[in-house]
Length: 148
Image (cartoon, rainbow, N blue to C red; front, side, top):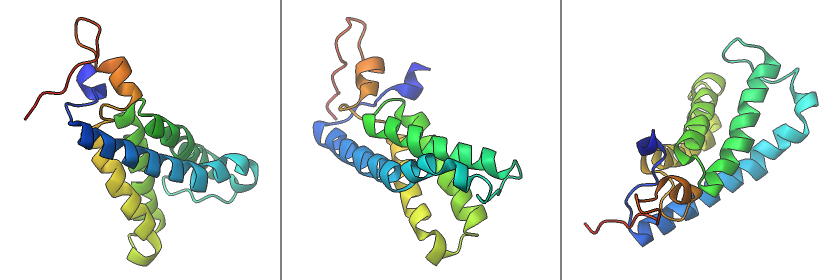
């Protein structure tokens, strides 16, 4: 389990890049998509697309969770891989089932997905809460990145 949440063994510049990517994609998703769904949940719940056949309100609830909680966790670098996975699933469903993989309509979902897949694979990096919680050595100090 620790390997799943481990922030990785990255250089400072790699970790800085991951921090920028996490903040950029996480906060953009939260502010431009998640916050709107959260604040207008009642209005949107009856008309929201239901691509999985579970109902409009449950579909909206899952999307809202990914685009608010997942996006904020990602920005903080807390449970980064889990957060990225929720967003990959969210946008994968949006791209394939809602936008029908039409490039013009689903391009934004497709591009966001690329960043979230990269963060799922790479983890949060050194500058994350994952590092503070899961990246410690046996002595209790943060683990140092190995030189490659």
